[in-house]
Amino acid sequence: MPRSKTSSVGRFSRPSRERPIRTPNHRVGLISIAPGPTVRAMSLTHVRKTWMLVAVLIVLLVTAARTFAADGEMRYGLHVTLAARWLDPAETEAFSTPFMVLYAVHDALVKPMPGGMQTPSLAESWQEARDHLSYTFTLRRNAKFHDGSPVTAEDVKFSFERYKGASATLLKEKVSDVQVLGPSQVRFVLRDPWPDFMLFYGTTASGAGWIVPKKYVEKVGEDGFKKAPIGAGPYRVVSSSPGVELVLEAFDGYWRKAPSIKRLVMRTMTEETTRAAALKRGEVDLAYLFAGPVAEELRRTPGVKLEAPLLTGAFWLELPEQWDPKSPWHDRRVRLAASHAIDRKAINQAETLGFSRLTGSIVPRIFQFAITVEPPAYDPARAKKLLAEAGYPNGFDAGEFYPFPPYNSMGEAIIGYLQAVGIKSRMRVMERAAYFTAWREKKLHGIILVITSVMGNAATRLEPYATKGGIYAYGSLPEIDDLFARQAREVDTKKREALVHQMQKAMTEHVLNVPIYDLAFIWGVGPRVEVSGANAIPGFPYSAPFEDLKLKP
Image (cartoon, rainbow, N blue to C red; front, side, top):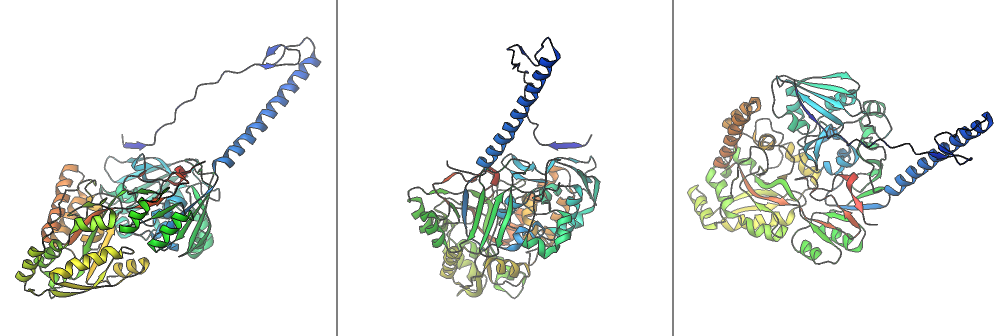
């Protein structure tokens, strides 16, 4: 029999006892037994009227309960510029940021939730074939889109075929066919056994498993869908002003539960001080990303609570010119010197109040197949010696330094530490969308400060950055490419783990990048919020699940 993964089954309620109805002649029974047909008819009429009245009262009570449940407005101050593409799962990037919106507006067959990293959602269950060549999903019959249409297997097939976001090439190379077996059943057929299918399809490693309505998209077109998206999530879009504001309203028909907050407003506030001031004044209830002095000030502010979820994401320095034999970065000793030059502990304290965790790997240690790598010690003398041995006793000009938006102060600190040992660079700040586009198109050079918190395992973390064909990889080592290809085919977990461990050790030995720390993502939460969603989904940086959020009475 195939292996099956299913959601939990609800508890059965006890059968209720029929309660007797008291009739006009004061006899007790479901129907009063009277001596004549007239009395009996009157009793039946009375019973019908009574039940009709009860039915009306139930409808009124349910309506009132729903109205009461979905009440109030929760306002967010966002650290990034809202992008229209985040409303379309097909364009999901290899970062967690789009899921800040996707978790509200859309839903996936399987996704990370409080109950687990691969929780049945639009799919109530799935089965992996014994030969590991197919996965069959059974959809929930009560799942529907915001226009009331049901979520079907055709929508699942359509959503996968139009997907062009993170890992799209890899997914479509591995999947040979998507078969619609019925309105509520769909099968993904693989070309070869691929043990990571569910990691790419059923986590935030990609957006391929997030479903959109086929008929609606075909009716309004791709551009029309971005302007007026319809999803199957707990909130529907009321209005969207890219770069400014997104307004959402509770969708009472959401299969899991109706949200308790009627309205969500997400506002772009890219300046940290602006977000902090808005939070203090009560203009927003929750604001993302605070660091250093601003975070410390908020911690001392009455009524404001700091949350600091530790992400499944590390900051690191990407050194794209290491693949150029003429560049100083081509020498391993230069890359190691840069790592020794940085005081990670001091940056952690200054930027995240010490909440982050220092690391020597871009793979979070909580990931499957991860190895724990401690970072090189802060040793500027050792850094200078390595540079001299590599032929750069006076250092060199490393060109431009691109901080990950909006972590500019962290970038300035790193530039200072590198400068102290002779590695000179100049800060170049970019808007986040432009940064991602330029990085993906391999237009950034010099030094790039990078972070990602996309979920997965050690292999999925390395694929976009360290393998041939990786969306952000400027180059790769044949050794790592070979190991990656071998582990991707290996269905024996122990053997696969050994291969992925070798990949990580090779990256560390060659110093392909300079890890800094696993980020603690600091929020500020205002006094009106009862349930913010912080740490509800392990490793997820944002507020979620949205249907679980609550405001205080």
